[in-house]
Image (cartoon, rainbow, N blue to C red):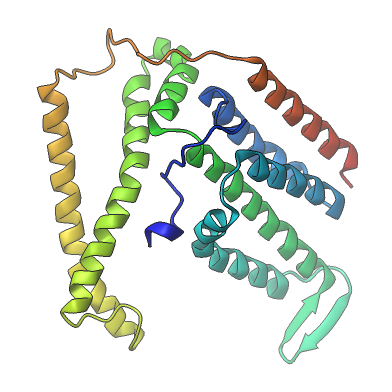
Length: 265
């Protein structure tokens, strides 16, 4: 399970993307979520795909690792594609499967929406794979710094995001241990009727929630023992520095946005 989950995991490296300022990567991921909706034809989606593949290549992350991480999402992508194929009635009729009619517009929209979802997942995954949770926390806190003037607890929000990302792999590992222990006692999670599988999940959830609450309590006690009292008056040991690489990234993103606007149908 741990090998197929990439959310919240960090892979150390010395690539171009690893060395970028976390603020640049956070802003890039946020802006990519916006500009991906500018694509509406084959050429613009090919441009987005080229940008995504180049980003994966530059990150120097193992392709098999990324592929294994996308496996849990492939079912959602396939389901999204099939829903658009069979429910969208636009364009000429391609073929008829009894009571199901497949139109050209449905196939086209299904491919576009599936690619859009795939690109978004890959780019946002690169953010966590190439950035430590601490850097993400500092980056979020710095970007949201102006919101402190209106009373937004920026530090607490950034810390909460960092802890959530940090404990995703931990909870998944705990889930895997509990599943193995329950399977050794005769529980069936992958075979048998669906009703029986759902019943076997209950013994899994109870110890998982107990373990999660215990970890949360231990973390809270550890933070209090070290004198944590919130973000008021706190300073950070990590000083972020914006470099030419970060500016280059934004120039590339600007060129991508202009290209999408010019190539739109």
